Length: 230
Image 1 (cartoon, rainbow, N blue to C red):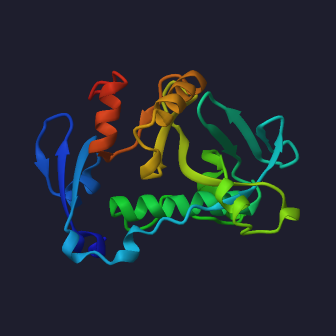
Image 2 (cartoon, rainbow, N blue to C red; image 1 turned 90 degrees about the horizontal axis):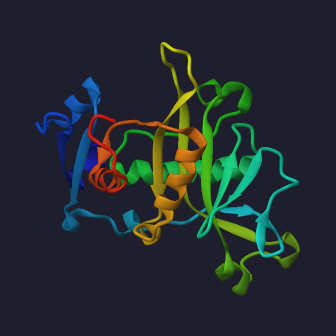
């Protein structure tokens, strides 16, 4: 956190009262907050900007990604993007990809630790009921530049991820909340999140969003018609 604060100015605003509060106070008391993060460009190590997207094994049939032979991985074909739903006990390469994306959201938002890390399924009790999604695209660049043997088959680049978790309620209904979401900066503003959001609403119904809410996410939620009270 301190390394992040050394190169950023962070303003936190309570979405209900519009009160500006200290970041540590917001983290301790909870609630729904907007983060306005500004970087001091004179203090940044160039390596801070490196984003090495993880690679996962893939097969292709009829122009679509296919993982029918991989236990714990289900593919959702949307109009403009492909989602992979990853089970908590999915093969390690997919969970490692999720962990790598979690480190990018840690770095971008200044978290003390990544919101997900790989653990053995039997020890990973905190994630046993979680629902993981990866955004994946065909890795044309690696294919053209022969970064791996052709015998390995087609591979996909993971450029985003999110996690939903069950929400305990008094009425025992199956509610979930979005714990976190991260999309590669170049893929933002392209309608990919809107497309997936519609799928999530159809799949889960009304779902919650874990705080804090970044300024970009607050703007996205406004476009989706969500109110501050939701």
